[in-house]
Image 1 (tube, rainbow, N blue to C red):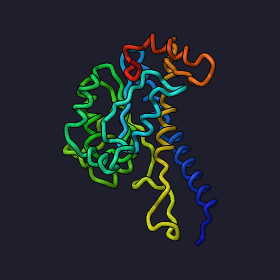
Image 2 (cartoon, rainbow, N blue to C red):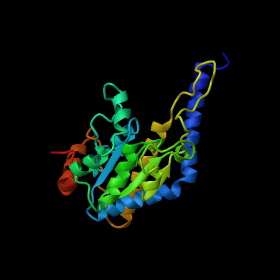
Image 3 (cartoon, rainbow, N blue to C red):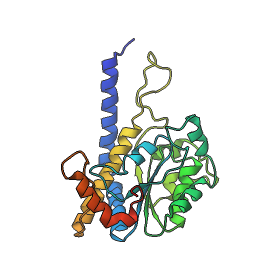
Image 4 (spheres, rainbow, N blue to C red):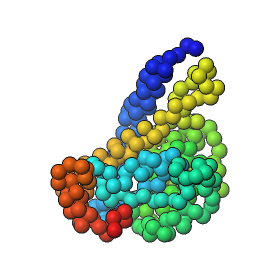
Length: 253
């Protein structure tokens, strides 16, 4: 065997950091535009939503009720279409169901003036494509976080033949390769392994929220940012945010 475990962990971390640098250097304009879009929604009285397909649901969940994050981000949950469902293959199957996204959007009351973040690595399956299409049909603006490379090397599974990237107001390319794996070592595994998409997408989304907070502050609006409940005064701060924006926050009852 030509590589040790230590070598592989270092190679993976280097690969992940290289993806992040590529995003920083090549997607700064799109990230800034996404931040402005979120700020526009907040300033205009809109609501913020996040949906992620499969494992892309993990970065979406990370935006909700997050210390240091925007309090107004609500999860567009699709029961069964998450990484923790049993059996896990059910989530993949539900991504191919037509009409499901429309039902979720209607049930949550997504409307004009809202901003919706849709995350899908491949951007090819029915559910994320219809989530973007449906949100825009309802008057919301859509930020798509996806790998543009998939659209260049795979076929769409949606009836329109389009990908997520084709149905958004702002697209952020996460630069992840087709197959979502960074390492290829034949002696270790016959297929590529060690995916970096969750790390990269989570960083992208936090950079977008940082841009949104800055854009709001520049307009004289105090960003509705949450504090950790594990620091003195954090819960009281959050209660004040919930009281001010309670009509746009749906994870607190």
